[in-house]
Figure (cartoon, rainbow, N blue to C red):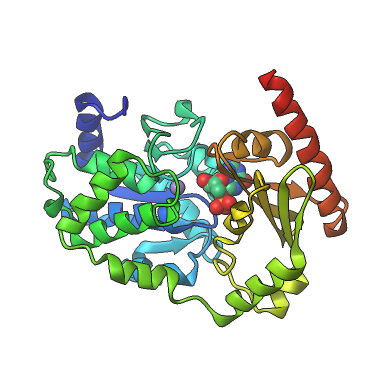
Length: 355
Ligand code: 5GP
Ligand code: MN
């Protein structure tokens, strides 16, 4: 963790001390790690006595994360999709912007321009590959870590306020950090490092209620999600001879099951449990594009595939991107062929690279 050193921690604390208006931002379509790290940092800053702290999101979090977001006063949680002007002005007028769980401004979608134009100091705390370091005044970047939440924990624990005593974290910060780590590791199924288990142990010791977090995350899905999952696994999942599994969800299918944001969370992981599957894709129809989630087994790079053929990126074994309509594919009906053709080329290239 090269970026976590006394010089950078000192700068982190000084930037916070010197700021009056602080904005916290994260990537579009925020997931558990995004909302977890934002919520944790918000409560830490409040405990530091900061009054003007706002979390600014491109779009609203999925309902299963309400238990975190409900801890933020509504006046401090601004959704740019609902109040674009306010979000823009708040970012423009901030003294300090803390950027969590993304590696480049465009990952915030509608906030990109305001971030680029803002004169505020910007701090990045992120665990993705290839962060755009030059866009930030202070960078905490680490990829051998479970989540942005774990990285934030590692930063906060070094501050004078917390001073290596996790029980000094506000309880809601501790809960939110545990939540973000849990969702990004799929409940300790992947990206779990010795430091991850150490953090989990330390947070449990402070009294974090993990049973409650797991209940909120995994036992409160809609019935329709489970019924769609049945339909997907029986009728909508294809596995190619290359060992590529893909699932295509068009708008009509999602409407038929009344699927909300977050309801398809985890679908992309399921086909990876098949022995011959090396990579798994979930494609979801969106306005003018298809959103793509990619997961891979060790030895196959979801990240490189996302960068090369899906206008995206992410982590080695968990990445994402998009296909634009009509630039990449004419319509949803061409999505299957695009996946089959391009993953075939990709896997051949990768094998070639290794030879
Ligand atoms: P998910 O499949 O859960 O949406 O995303 C998996 C990972 O890929 C996340 O770490 C996410 O940040 C990254 N990712 C998802 N979509 C994109 C994208 O469009 N561009 C880039 N650069 N990364 C993405
Ligand atoms: Mn993350």
